[in-house]
Each structure stands twice: as C-alpha cells, then as structure tokens.
Image (cartoon, rainbow over all chains, first blue to last red):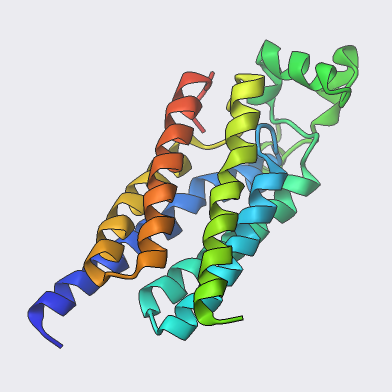
Length: 131
Length: 87
C-alpha cells in the first residue's frame, strides 16, 4: 500500500466519521425530546433500503470504507425510522409553540388545533429536572 | 442479479429517498425537528466521501455521493430557510 493509498483511505475514514457524527443531533433530538416533527418517514424507509443494498454492493466490491458507511447509514436510518414513527404526532415544546406547526398538522388532519398541545408527552429531561 | 445491479438499484433508491424529505420541506415550509446540525454534517460528509469516491474511481459510489452531496446541500438550505429554531 503506497502513501497515496493511505491518504485516500484517510479521506474515506474522515468522511465516514463525519457521517456517523452527523446522525447524533437528529437521533438525540428524537430520543430525548420525543419529537418527530418535520421528519419524512417515507424518505427514511427508502434511505434504509438503499443503504442496505449499497452495503451489500460494497461488500461485493470489497470497499471497507463504504461497507462501514452504508452499514452505519442503514442502522441510523432504521433508528430514526423507529423513533420517527413512534413520535410521529408528538412535538416538543419548542416545535409545538411555533404557530405553523399546529396549522400544518391541522391541515393534514393530524390534530385538533385547540388540543394540539396534548399530543406532546413530557420528556425525560423535564422529568429529571422536575419541571 | 449481478453485483453492479445491486449498486444501481441502491443508487436509484438513494435518489428517490431525498424526494419525500425535500417535498415535505417545500410543502410545509417548516423544518420542524429536522436537525440543521445533522444536515450540515451530512453535507460535509457527502463532500468528503464524494472526493474519496472520485479518487477510488468506483462509478456507483461517485454517482451516489455526488447526488447525495447535491441533495443534502438543498436540504441544508431549506432547513436553514424554514427553521424557526436550531436543533
């Protein structure tokens, strides 16, 4: 393996690490705040399927960086899909208070505007802080 | 199914996958809980991995990462435009 090959692999490793870190804020918000507002479940179903297939392709093509990337991508999408589906109609106080949130949800027939605040359940942070 | 077909179907699904999220953003004009930080990091990662795919010379991953870079950039722009907050 030449120096050039090693440098090229580092580029892929950095990119994969960034992709892994990139999912943290989204998953943290979903899990901690139990808020699935604005997340397209259809998109994540397709991403999960695509990443699984590309992971198989990367295995066949013997590309370790893309095996790690697509494998993680598929797992992260599955996690977002799970929590996004679970908290689909739930909104954290921040997103609930934005007027457009209620308007959009009402338009979709997801919530009754007057009772929209009841769709959100208390999260673990607030319970811990005793709010 | 040959290995290339697995890659081509995966690439097609990646291309389709961005559509519902972009349509949702454009239709509702709201980013909601879609994380700006996540979107920004994913765009940076796509850029680096696009460069990596170019250097590796694998056509499937060049197309996937190139498209992902363009679509992720569009999501960041819409996310920032329609965000009332920063999650």
